[in-house]
Length: 290
Image (cartoon, rainbow, N blue to C red; front, side, top):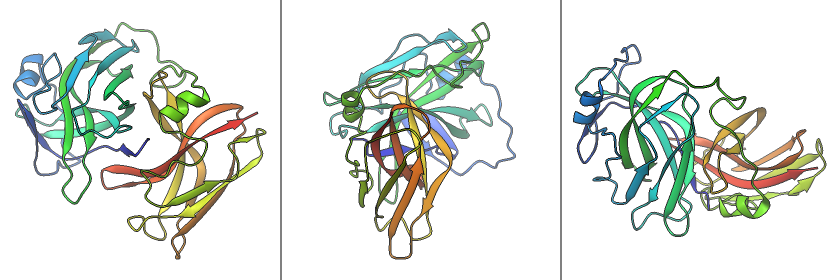
């Protein structure tokens, strides 16, 4: 199942050896500074993934690569991690060399499989040495980030960015999409409400309607946005692309209804939802247009 997509956590942090300690927010006017590899290591971003606070395993295929070179982070999530949990990758933007800064969501994700394994592919265009982290935020009133940090150097000797902007998309069939949480019937496990869709296969340009009820956490008036999943492997790694103008609002009685048209032919995974705190709360489904 594809429960919740983690969004960026724009808070200051102090990173020390085994984990991440939340501190006060960073002012938007603060200037991002450059940290050396040694300084990043001192602040908990080593060349090899720091799994002390993760509790699972993690391996980085390389710690240096040219722009847009495919790099893989793989491993196993700690016991107790839900199957289908979304792991997201974020870049650390320091405002000084003592560990204060913010994390920027790179919209690069992977999904935890049934055996707790995961494989995340990323291709970076921003050159330089930075700290990164991969993981997820826990639910509740005081969410905590569960993951592992590392440093990575992107050199400016790669090819221009591919058309997709961040990574090369791959095709997933119906079974692969379903395994990643994009089922033909709407997957509402991470949504918490109800949802039905009028069809999972239609001609391109034909109207499709998805409707249901929102959970108590998603209040009336909340805007729900439709986004397409762009896969970078067949295991569930990828990113989400918002579809401009395809959105609806939760009504006063807690219901919602969205009728939309997809003109591009093909089978894709989609999510309809909203950012709530540090997480994306939504439903997932697959749709084929012919």
